[in-house]
Image 1: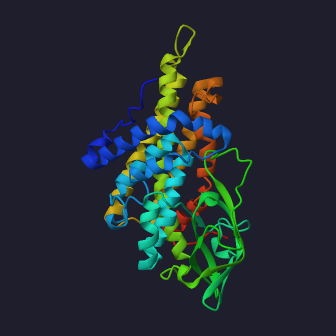
Image 2: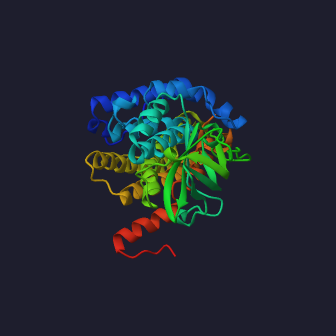
Length: 389
């Protein structure tokens, strides 16, 4: 099968700069040459392809919108989105790794950290020398993060953490965890380094989704960290929610990549699969599916492009990010299922990426805010009435 040529029915490429297109092409070729040949093997084995980390760092895929002084690429948000799109066309787990490293670890250190914390951690995270994770969700508190029970207590010149986090991408391989805990009743951010006494990060097994991604628990039992590991500018639930907005933005673009991979596979298959003496692409019901898939991809592309431009202008609202995440993941999953229908029984084989993307998107639909929670976030914004409980 020839290499992926892209999906662009509305000539949206005309609205990208030369630099943005070059970045997309570079990441697209990286995915073709480095991700696609090995990802099915890792998915089946339930392992993350860690050999990709230095290559991703070399391409500037970690913290790419942050300043060059920290070793970052300092590109705009549209370019960052295109990076996430291409990575997820490879696999949601690979994109998740980059999203967490960038939006949930480097972003909070850059935004809420001290100069010392930024100077020490950001270059190491940008180069892939260090890996990070983000600890907010708890076993009993997912959609209601404000109910967290993880606590930090000041003892002398240190903080002592007690509690647990769950569904943490990169947790078991991370060198540092950005952990959110209540200190005197207020949610604050802390940096907890691997190997700290009282801190464990066991990997969660038995997943049918995101199998090429490390998912972990974080457990804190009288875990003592230095006072200097508090993120000094963090404060309240707004701080971790700002981080989630960054991650959700990347997901909105990433889901497009999964959708494109499924659509492209289904289109090519339908043109070569012969039934009743002709390619199945000649049947009306197949064409209806392909047209629906392409239409939803095109709508999602336009939404992402405008959201990226608004973000670069400092005008994007977190509710607009919620709309893009909600819409794009929903339709990407729909497209994956329709692609499987077009491929028939062949759609379940690992010779094609359809079933892997479909299973992955089930998780993507849930994490960083469920479909339902994003519905209520937007609903409150347009009506002025909160309907969360």
